Amino acid sequence: MRSAIVVGATGLTGSSLIEQLCENDEYVSVIVIARRELQYKHPKLEVKIRNFDTLEEKDIEFAHELYCCLGTTIKKAGAREAFEKVDFEYPLAIASLAKKQGIPHMLVITAMGANEQSRFYYNRVKGKLENALIELGLQRLSIIRPSLLVGQREEFRLGEKVGEKLLKLANPLLIGPLKRSRAIEASQVAKAMIVIALHGKKQSVTIYPSQDLAKMEFPNVTQEDFTRDELFNWGKLQNTTLSNEEHKVNREVIINRDKFKVEETVVDEDVTFNRHNEK
Image (cartoon, rainbow, N blue to C red; front, top):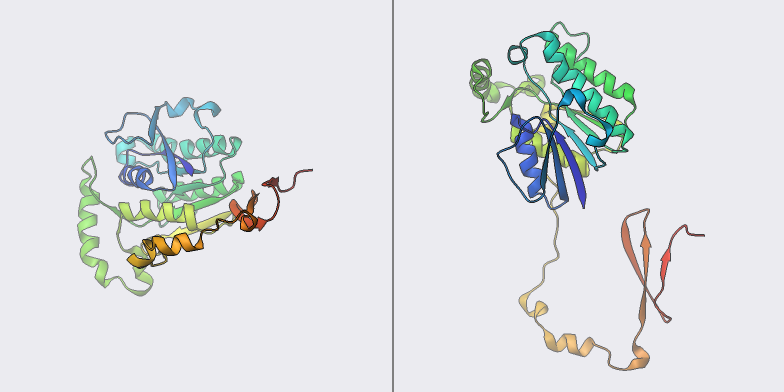
């Protein structure tokens, strides 16, 4: 059973992410740190209203994953300084607090063209954030680099709407190396982040480009098929039940905490619980 912290939950990708996390059986707790209340409600969801300028270590408790979906535009921020505060300073400060709390995995959304040496200011800031997070030395860092995000936003952005429509029309024509520029649904990016958290690479730093995010799905879980007769064959069950005391055996359950699984063996002695590595 896992827990997650999400920052940037009111945006296009973040809002889809918290819904998918709450509906995922692997997660029992989803904590959102936001500057305002959310419309979405769920029994697993807890929203903490905080000022990002005054976040403290106590505001970031332990979780298995920290999902960072913070991001804005220069137009909305009003100035480059305000833009960098949201897209660089806040994520880096939150990552530092998460490291102190021992959160083992951070997933952060940057941009397809993130590069500190880019000609474009937006991509330079995203590249600077990536480099700063890598230098921070997090236990595990997954960098998410989507192309243009599409989906239903709360706010109307004319430039992105025009670009979204053009890219949707152009998507079938973008093949080969141009495939990485295809627009991607924000809900797919959110799903890919959860797939990465649960089944992704375990190395310290991994960068996921947009074309890889677009293909990510949860692995199929194969279930053993049983016929109805096998499921409800009570006679067979009774025949296999041992009524003789001399044939009864006890089970010794060994909990292998290192592998987080339960191994079972059968022995002819009292039930005992052995903890590995105990002296």
